Image (cartoon, rainbow, N blue to C red; front, side):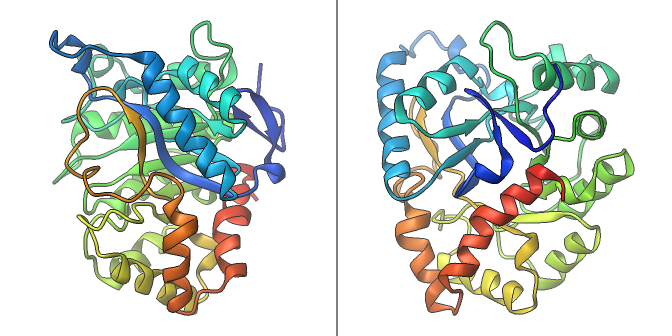
Length: 316
């Protein structure tokens, strides 16, 4: 089954892309670190995790969020069935990812020994046929690079993601670790990915020069300030000022907002989750107000959260 033009795969089936509404492009409804389930000391309570996630999603729906893109790749224990149950209970759209994480924090040997073509075939299958027997088809491709230079394993994954994007037309979202955005964009586009359907993520992972953003955008791709509220990486005042400056330069159609929040997880919270604002809702209840203080009005914020995601998924 191929994706119907003008629709986006959600965990409950395709929806018209133009009806996705307010969309957060990089969140984690539930995740765990690769190998965590091999630690015998961890006792997982799935029902409790699900109830926690549903509570966060209902709160998000209540502040006007319509769609959550779950950026959890295969090797961070993505659970399509869990996402489906959560979406049904909370009555909110969830888009499930296919793809792989960084070599240092994911990528089991099973995937490392696959060729780019074999990986691409896997990703395409999860988009067009579905994920196992869950009935869920992925709606977005996720790839990532770690600190420092991009590794050969990560390059192979990016090549596979690019091939899958060109074949299926679904968008690509990425994880960066304080750089690599330009390199990511070049690998993806040189291997066939449509630049207009690529979103380079975490450009707010650290303080970067304005020229870094300009160099990313010159490749034709989009970029996301998708760690709003995570002041361990960048103060929100700096984040808001950078976004306002890019908008003042007429670049609002190339920008995306999200929080990279974790609504529920297996095991203890990571360091960046401790002290983070309330998952999902802070973007609407706090960060939007901060953007307003920097001159970014409600209509522009709505463009970043509705029109831009619809364009990314629609490819126009």
